[in-house]
Amino acid sequence: MRHSTTRRNVLRGTVAAAGLAATAAAPAGAAHAVPPKGSGPDIGILLYDGYSLLDPTGPAEVLSRLPDATVTMIAEKRGAVRTDTADVAVVAERSIDEVDRLDVLLVPGGGDRGTVGAMNNQALLRWIRAIHRHSRWTTSVCTGSVVLAAAGLLKGRRATTYWASAEYLRSTFDVTYLPQRYVHSGKIITAAGVSAGVDMALYLASLLTDDDTAKAIQLAVEYDPQPPFDAGDATEASPQLKERALQLLASSQV
Amino acid sequence: MRHSTTRRNVLRGTVAAAGLAATAAAPAGAAHAVPPKGSGPDIGILLYDGYSLLDPTGPAEVLSRLPDATVTMIAEKRGAVRTDTADVAVVAERSIDEVDRLDVLLVPGGGDRGTVGAMNNQALLRWIRAIHRHSRWTTSVCTGSVVLAAAGLLKGRRATTYWASAEYLRSTFDVTYLPQRYVHSGKIITAAGVSAGVDMALYLASLLTDDDTAKAIQLAVEYDPQPPFDAGDATEASPQLKERALQLLASSQV
Image (cartoon, rainbow over all chains, first blue to last red; front, side, top):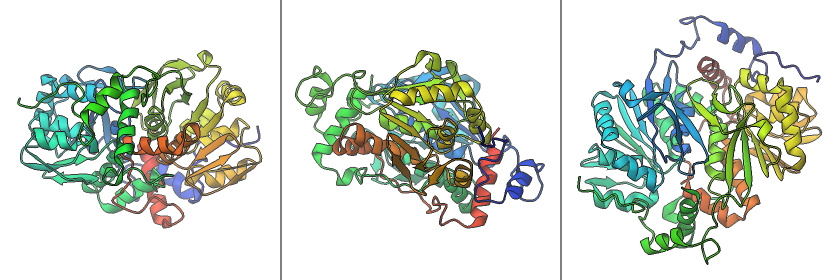
């Protein structure tokens, strides 16, 4: 093969090679150098059986690019935790017993089975409350806000959730539902369904650092969304499309 | 707690409960019922050490909602495969030796270490070529297109890739680079960086089914993107922002 595959040349592209190489080799603290991972925000993402894959992984992709950040997948027990469709498993690196402080907690959503399971898991809810007591930010994606509500964290607050769970959230808890991509209330930030976690994570990145860093992360993950259809807004969707969406969810979930 | 958490009531929301319950309970083949998983497209996503987390997981979220679809994470060996930042591991459920046919192959991108590692792994490249011979669609996200090129699949084709790898792709292989969100060339579809995999997956979903189903999936994952900044387009980004993005990538990767 004639292609050159020397390390660090694939991503040089439009940026001067020397600049990138110098940055990569620069010691911590040098001018323009980004400090090594680990001394920055400690971000924990809770997994539970039946979460939706993009809820934790979209924000993890964004937040893991924060300078010095550590992103840790956490579950009731260490090990592989399976998604709502059962197709995919992400590894929980730590159990909740091993984690008593986080700068950022993120609670993903899931299908009914997963969400209800988490809402009824008193050990998880106790842990969420304990982490929230000292967190800088407590966040959720999709029906993760329903789990936060079940833990008692959303009392009297404004919040968002998955479009199809809005009525449940509003009617079950003392929560003012806002149909926004994400809602910031005190140190709690809730995101709308599934893919909204990426938008929320960029916002959170700006809060943890600054707008320029968040913009650089957006470019790093090339988040210039151009979906081929314009069908993601539930407030504009027909009843038929909503029913079809929920059918696809129900039939894909185990 | 006063909240009701009976199974299947969290997601009822704005859709008639009876309709959803009937759908969920309907046998395969009944009117309006979505057939059970497994008889539809067999979608395989290749993992390798050092991939970027959102590259496989964004498309997996979308494609796992296709009627009857099976999404399988595949790697050289079964087991946990770690991302470029080493923060997260997704489980490969099958080894490449166990998979000789797929309807859809998706090759994610990664950091330099991961991408170059995949490009130099002859066993992986052989497997990619063998799967491509019979696939309906062979797809990539981010620098995954560089891996497809290294396997010899992009000769004389138009393709896209991660913005910072465009020059490398163009100058190293016989490829016409197009700065698009995704590029369709024969049965190969390449996506731009990281988050572009979600857009590409919705397009692929429409090819595998129809526009209405793809739109329903878009609504199911509430993909109505509203990033807090407008910084994801490399053709509009300043040299400073590009350098900062690549610095953040370099320092977050191991």
